[in-house]
Length: 224
Image (cartoon, rainbow, N blue to C red; front, side):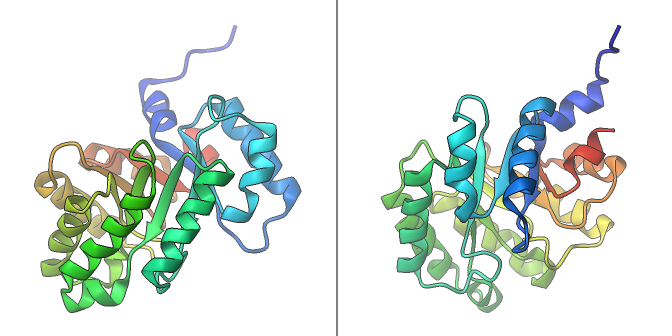
């Protein structure tokens, strides 16, 4: 008789986005990742846009929520390029978009610029499509974190994601940032913690701090 999953395992399943954004990922690896997502009943798979047709040819939107990234990992594309990429990803079958915001704008305190970019994407994308805006929080001073996140949320972002994973935050700082965002973002705006989450304990602590989603290339290890 199979033991029922623990409450913590259930929480993790509802929040985990199993991720493989490696440029060297193979077709076989992506197929297996998608299969494991379905088997494990995690929240979503997160993959590069080139793999959307492959995954969608094997798994319906009802069976598997598919997240893809836009302007990853730098966020340095023009707004027009991001809009076109977002539209293409949705047409191919993506359920949700993780879009990298322009770090230079956040560093300069150009919150109007951040807002305009999100507004442009939101205008072109169905309102049912979840937009998660990625801000490389590891590069921001404390006084820029919340204003940057608020600018993105007020412009139409549904979720603020704490990083691309290329510049992971130390765990305690990650926790602190998630708590601040949970306290200061409008009700209904979600937080996705991502980058350097290596253990089940760390993932659960981030959920306790206020994260709604966890992005990890080690998703299945976190369930064990």
